[in-house]
Length: 132
Ligand code: HEM
Ligand code: HEM
Image (cartoon, rainbow, N blue to C red; front, side):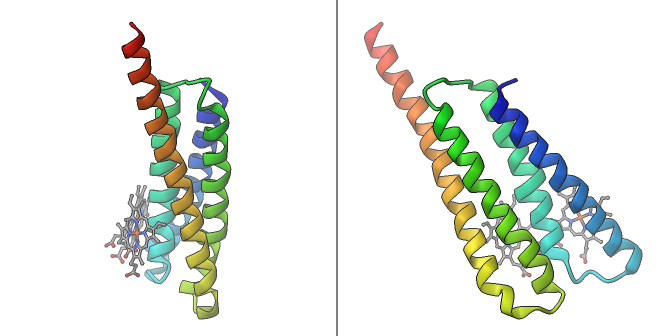
């Protein structure tokens, strides 16, 4: 498995452990205040990172390697900025809202980089096919 997939899967499992702990804490306390932090830690963290990891495992491309690493760094930075801020915002620290916004924009940038990686593979495959 390529290193980039391992990085995404490792990030995914860390998010799942924290996300599940948050879910269990909500379930046991009956206090569901941090629902959005729980949902997005699981969905942006566990689910999306696993899909990225799976994509790179199935489409190991040397050409897109550097861009894939940029995708990983930007996306993970977005998670680190957005999710703790969202958690503490839901606990009443409304002043953290701009940080959540900045984090989500970084995540969005990471997703756009992923789109470029996917499309650049398409373009490479098309020019390859034309050569045959
Ligand atoms: C140990 C496992 C888990 C526990 C105990 C748990 C617990 C909870 C609780 C207590 C809520 C709040 C429900 C409400 O107030 O309506 C919730 C919401 C949610 N959970 Fe989990 N959860 C778990 C795992 C997961 C996983 C793995 C995912 C996604 C992959 C997930 C996604 C969500 C989502 C999207 C919501 C929001 C649902 C809505 O908006 O109604 N949860 N969870
Ligand atoms: C940067 C990315 C994202 C942003 C900024 C964002 C923003 C939001 C916002 C503002 C809400 C409403 C929360 C509330 O009413 O308290 C929400 C809810 C929700 N989002 Fe996202 N979202 C993002 C990505 C995603 C992704 C990738 C998924 C699924 C794979 C997802 C699934 C959900 C679900 C299930 C809910 C309802 C659960 C809840 O109330 O927290 N979101 N999102």
